[in-house]
Length: 71
Image 1: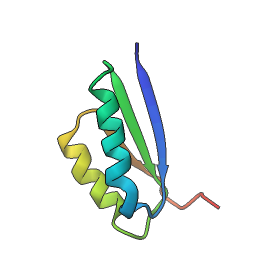
Image 2: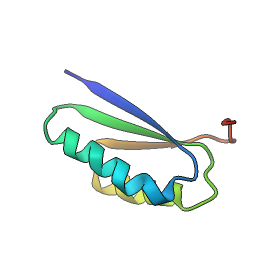
Image 3: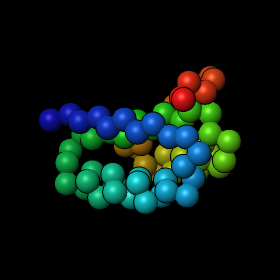
Image 4: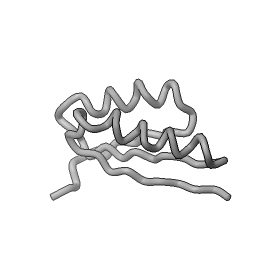
C-alpha cells in the first residue's frame, strides 16, 4: 500500500523535529510511505531545517511555495 502524508508548514521551526520524528516512527512500520512537506515561505529557519532533514531521509520530500498563500 502506498501512503502519502502532506504537511503544510509556516514558521514551525520549533516543532518540526518532533513532527517529523513522529512520521519517521510511523514509516518504520509501513512500506512505501512518503511525507510531503509544503513550506509556505516561512520566515524562520523551517525551510533550511526541512532540507537538512530530507537529505538524510528518502521518504521526506520538501516543496516551497513561491509566495505565501496562507491566511
